[in-house]
Length: 381
Image (cartoon, rainbow, N blue to C red; front, top):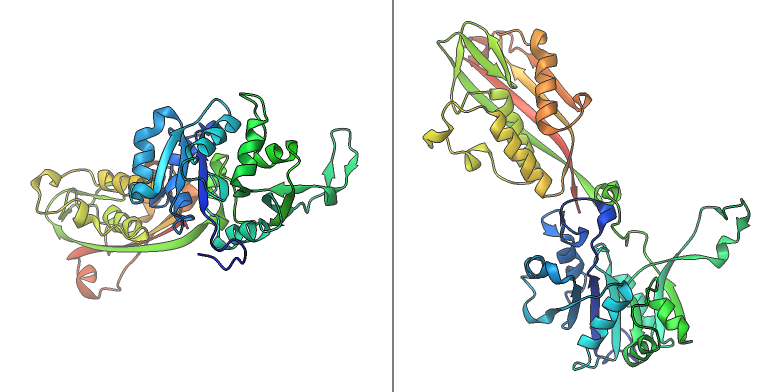
C-alpha cells in the first residue's frame, strides 16, 4: 500500500471521530455533515482514506441517516459505532469496535479535517516504525505571550494535527488506564499518560480543522471560477418590460420565457455555468406552461440556492444590457439593488451597464434586446 519498510505488511485500521455537534461552526447540521463543494465534509474526509479497507466512523446516535448518506459509496469497508459524552469516550468506542479485526496500526483522525494529504499519512506511518505513537505537527511562527505578557519560548511548542498514529495494542492498553468519561484533549495525551514513546512528524498547513463558519470560506480551500451567460429576447407590442427585476414603461414589451427578463436570464445562466449546472432551460423548460409569465427572480433564487448547496460564494456579478432603448442609466441603481437583495450580496458586488450596437444588427434596428453576464464565484476544492 505504501513504501514503508517494516510496516509494509501491517494491518492498518482507521478511526474517524465524528460524534461531535460542531456548534462553533454554525449551520443547521453538525459540521461533519455540512456540504463542502459537491460532498459532505465527512465524505471528503473518507476520500482521504480510500486506500484502506477497515474504517470505523464514530458517530452521534442521532446521525445514522446523515452517516449513511456520507459514506454511501464505501459499502462494507466503512462501519460506524456510537460515540460517548466526550471525545475520549468516542475513541474508546472506536478502538473497541476494532477488536475483532485486531489491527497492528490504528490511525485516529478528526472528521472535520477533510484536506488531509497522503504525504501526511505516510509521514505518520513511517515514524511508527520506531515509536509507539506519532503525531503530525507544525511549528509556531508567531510570537507567543502568556496572559501577563511574558514571552513564551515558541520553540518548545508545536501545533498538533491528525491523523495520530499508534500501535493498536499499546493505545488500547493506554485507554484502559484512564478513568471513565475522562476528557483528554487528544490521543497523544492518552499515550503520554502511559509513557508511550511519541514521535513528531511533519504536518501540513493545508490540513486544517473546520471549526468556525469562516473556515468553510477560506480562500486557500477554494478556487475562483467565472461563469458567463447570454440571452436575447424579441421586442413585441406592449407598454412595459422588466429588466433585471425592474419594471420599465418603455412603450413596448419583450417576448419570451416567463416575464422575458433578459438581464436576469443571462445572469442566471452565468451562475449555473459557474458550477457546471447546465442552463436555465434545463431547470425551467420554456415548453412547460407553468413558467409562462412568472417573475424571473424565481430562476435567479434557484441558481443561488444551487451555489449555496455546493458551498460556493458569489463574489461579484456583472450584467451588460445591449439595446437602443430603453435608457438603462435611470434604472441602473434599482437594478443593482434588486439583484443584490436577491443574491444576498452587497450592492458593491453588482455591476449593471448598457451599450448599443451603433444601429447595427437586430438590437440596432430595435428588434430585440440582448444581455450578457459574468459571475465570479469561489467554490470549495
